[in-house]
Length: 423
Image 1 (cartoon, rainbow, N blue to C red):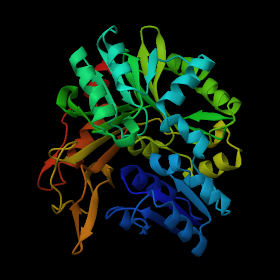
Image 2: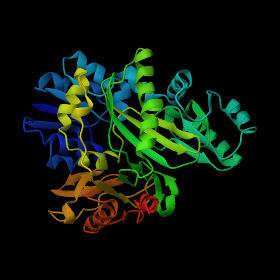
Image 3: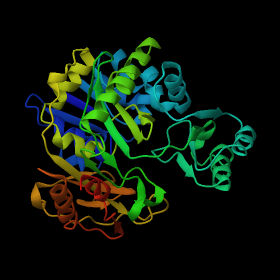
């Protein structure tokens, strides 16, 4: 089989690495891929949002199956267009991808179908949003309605911060058109949990839970990023909580999407908070999370391509999805200054084989004169698996310490909260 994977980050590298395990796979094309992915796939194209180019490639090459992973091409309808060409795909169509593409759509879906989430209001006008803030409590959460690379959410601790967030999004357009509409939400408290789930629109099979570390600096300080590291499983996601989530969130969401005429087929990401009132949805994503994928897929025992084909063909069963009873930790090495301004172009030095059996997934790097150099804010992720979380964390850091590039920065406390919860 020849596989086309759309995307070019660490998540896609993890997906490609897992798909390669299937002996029937002959060629994997990555559109556009990156300098590190080029070691595991043939990189083609320049942009994941170049749907015309993607479709032309599919017409002129023997693509047997396509995997569309990033939010933007999914929201733009990449799956719809490839399926129209006769290329079977893993990923939701444009209508279903609205669950991430529009936070107001997602919130209204949850309200209509009784899925637990924070109370909220939606605003298309900055003045109305600012007037609402005068009477609302703080902290408060301000969200750009559209996708913003994981950075369009501001937790404002004061009204002045909240007002500034609204002005930045709606007037200054710091997130472009994604901020023309904003959602203002009640601030929830409790441990956060990420759960990815395979679903064919009828059956839903959750994957192992994970804990993301969004803040740039140690101690969960600094700006929100796309993610500075992850661990799995998340100790706050107990079997009892998992059962509640299945009954009150996961199954109701799949049924709601089907009832709305836009059944979701693909990987549905549930961003959850375990509040004093029980688990609630913070956000949905219409695809694999990044960097959650880099700890979840290394623990997957089943064949990923087989699962993806079952999702597309609506033949998914729980028995198809098996995970090892182990733990994983991913530590992100980023460019200093990320998520704001940062320099790139620095050579990356790493051993041919990482210690402790760790893997490296390349996110922001390119080839220059046969040398891998930095080309993004999040440069790479180092993932280690072990029989227990403490060992996985220790091994991930041991491996990460063998990789060097100028301007490198990483958090030193990935997994600390999870380990504290296990005591």
